Length: 165
Image (tube, rainbow, N blue to C red; front, side, top):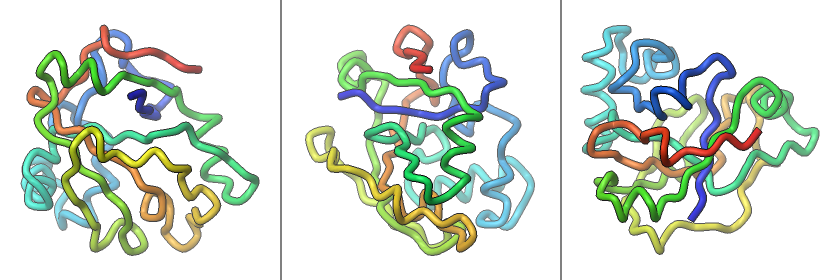
C-alpha cells in the first residue's frame, strides 16, 4: 500500500530519511500550543501521552492532495513542498513498524484529536475530504483523515522512499 508524505522543499529526506519529531530539532511550532511548552522534551512527552509512540511516528496520507480551488493553503502545500511516497508493506515486512494510528477528526487547530489504532488492512482508502478544508477556521488536517505510522527507530530510511514530484 502506497502512502504519501509532504515535506518542505528545503529537506534532507533523500539523504537522511523521513524523520519523526523525535529525530528533529525544528518544525515543532505546530505542537507548542497543544503541548503548552516550547521545550522539545515537553512536546515529546505530550505527544506520547496522546498515544504511545506518537513522537516516533510519521504522518501520511492515502492519496495526494486534491486541490479543488477551495483553500489556498492546500495549493501552497502542493506548490511549496516535495511529495514523497513509501510502501507500507515493505516497512512492515522489514520490521520497522511498531503500530499504525488513524487520526480522523479533531476540533479546530488540532484540539481534542481523535485517534484509534488500526491494522494495515483496516486503512481506509476511500477519497479524502479536501473540500472541507478551511484554514481560516483552523481546519486543515482536522478534517482530513490521515495515518500516523509509529516506527521503532523513528525514521523511514531513504531506501524505502520515492520522490514523487
